[in-house]
Image (cartoon, rainbow, N blue to C red):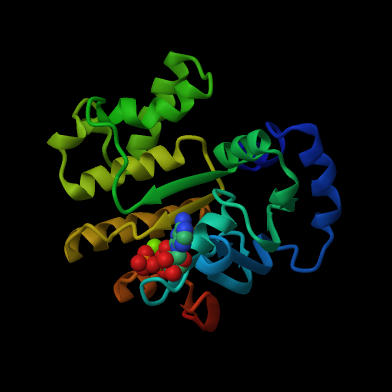
Length: 256
Ligand SMILES: Nc1ncnc2c1ncn2[C@@H]1O[C@H](COP(=O)(O)OP(=O)(O)OP(=O)(O)O)[C@@H](O)[C@H]1O
Ligand SMILES: [Mg+2]
């Protein structure tokens, strides 16, 4: 499948070299592995220990929720695990690739090919139509306009919005906007989708639609989801809930 190819084809040479030994490592079914990750923000008197040695393993095709009080480090964990932010110590491996060993540019490429992101606020450009928003990451990375449009339309179809492609974000409901951001996160056929409070701005019925969509993508297409949420109803739909307190994982619940 092209998704599997996406993990090995577009990455630069150092990635291919580093990936080989990890494949035989324990926990080979893991797509995400964090080992004693710490994150300290600020310096000297203003230090915040946002992550206090987090170890975590996520299996391919798993759907995991991260829950905990505001300020406990959920977003920091998501940003560090996805390589959006640097860790202070410890290591993060994604699909066998130690992301700390990548240059900024290689890491950006690696993210673009292997991961999608969904945030609470939609981050859609208001002057662009839905399909233009979805195709933007492809256009920026040099895909031809024709192919980008075809792939964006296919992604909109995956989220049930094929007929809404010409509308601008302001002409869409909150749930439809979040579907557009999910389509955008899927446009590169990633294996992992990271979501930070994806239902935080939605009413409970719309939130239920969105989590159902994610569940379908997980079950039918094997996408791995890591979802930061305050919503117990969202957590209850995942395979596993990771509970955090003060930058640490304190409890895990396996639901199915
Ligand atoms: N860029 C930053 N600089 C300094 N401190 C930060 C930064 N980002 C987060 N923090 C601090 O790190 C801690 C964890 O923040 P984080 O955003 O990860 O929490 P969270 O669990 O996502 O909270 P919420 O549920 O409110 O989104 C908090 O004490 C926060 O103030
Ligand atoms: Mg947060």
